[in-house]
Length: 139
Length: 385
Image (cartoon, rainbow over all chains, first blue to last red):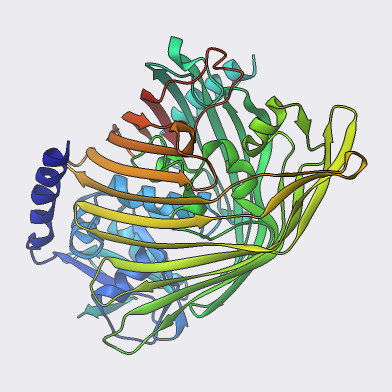
């Protein structure tokens, strides 16, 4: 049993060194969000419920329900697949620590919602139209 | 009949194609989950079930209703139907609270609130949250869960950003009143000895926890301390009436977890040493209730594919107040797997290798006495939305 455990840990530790591809998604925010850039860690904190602020102001994350941009965002900035990601949010909901963020169908719906709701932040495909919102640089 | 209705409800809930209903106009959300488990043991019957014959007596269903009327304020309530062997078979209130978060540095919640102690106390009852069918029982005893999970009172919480190279510090502080109900798993051995706590045991409960999110991404190290002032409650033993008394004590834990990409590694150490006596003044009788538990576990899991996760843990609990014997400790080697069919449906399979009888067992379901070792197989299916 101990040999099995050691082998398990050896294989698992290799996953720490996975190299991430450059994301084909952009992060957008309502124009009321003061900051123009966000760190990867702060972005992950907002989209995993660990934080509700950016640049000192309250922000609300908006998700895509599914799709390429959604999967790429999760891989690039969260490090989880959709099932694990939503399970993480449900942990917070069922323990009384958060409410589930809104999930929308498609980039256009996300842009429309973020443009008209103060404090919201979302993500869309790089090539998608994004009038009325600002782009946050992820550093 | 209740379990049939719960099972039917679980199937109906699981058929909803879209995630939780969202009543947008009122900003209300409804979530829920349901699980059905099956236990089989090679020797001893476990957790008051007839597990040596195979037992399906493990069912849960949870409904959660929450609203966020304004960005900083959340209100919510969560109710649960729970059955495990002879425990539960009733609908109980998990929590009901109002939560106001000023900013990341400070938030408060009041009502019936979850106690944010240890590594997994806040989520130990949320089966969809983790790979394990049973968390390490020396820490998260499923038969005591209803009493230890939450209390009436409040929690203050927040995150402090430390110096750029020192990470972040999450803090939690809580206070209120906790009740260990008369039918709680803690009192199984007392009831089997003919004693009864008609009102359970309750009293003030305070504590704090610190989680240091270190500069190494994914690594958190922390500790928690629960402080209980003196508690006392009526106790009966046949014709005698007395009290169960606890003197002030603290229950502290140290823990750490590392999560990155596909891997999770965690460990925890806990000491529980409540000074408890059973007092029967009319008979000039003072009986000590010896508990001096030192518990620890180490666990690891790895996401083999997008849907399949495997894990192992080793957990040990030793009651130093008990003489050397199988009843002094409980050692549990566990191999586990979880398959997520979708974000709504999952299944778990888990094998325990249990050595020692300090945990898990009761005399009534094991009239022939306890064997020192038992293998436990668990199969579980769950739906969540």
